[in-house]
Length: 219
Image (cartoon, rainbow, N blue to C red; front, side, top):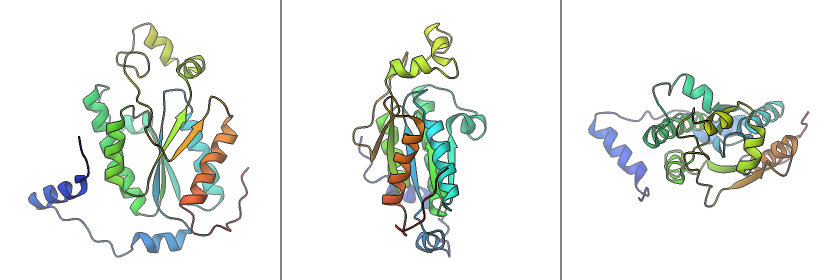
């Protein structure tokens, strides 16, 4: 399925329903000049237990210390509110990702660096998120083998999935499609969280920061 015309199709659909996009008076470029960085989305994807939320929250803290405007969208938090009506079927997973991408795109347009931490197991759904968000979308594969993630099992989910208590659990009874060509790979099976956060921070400084001489002090 091709998504090359996704933005055009969405704009045409909105116009057909008498919906017109607000033309903000503060451009993304002006937001970037004020904050010293471009808005965008670091889309962290990986198996449950790979360390997505831990890396994402560590990155958010590091960015805050450096004066960046950053915010984490986490899978559990979003499903507790915005997407509480969705289950875990392939269709609901796709809708979950679509909604998150739309929200993340709005944050990014405001000049915020959004760090999303979602399993987002299907490449097609992540490609749709890329189309929605645009050039500020950076796919980050938080890589850890199933064995590593299952041994960690911080929430006890793998144990329950193995016992048949959780249907359609990614990696056990539902597939996970690793990214085809991510902008960044962070292997949390081979490096600790501190090193993983620094890898993500290096990526932000290379691709999103306007002032490359920004003082870098990370606790």
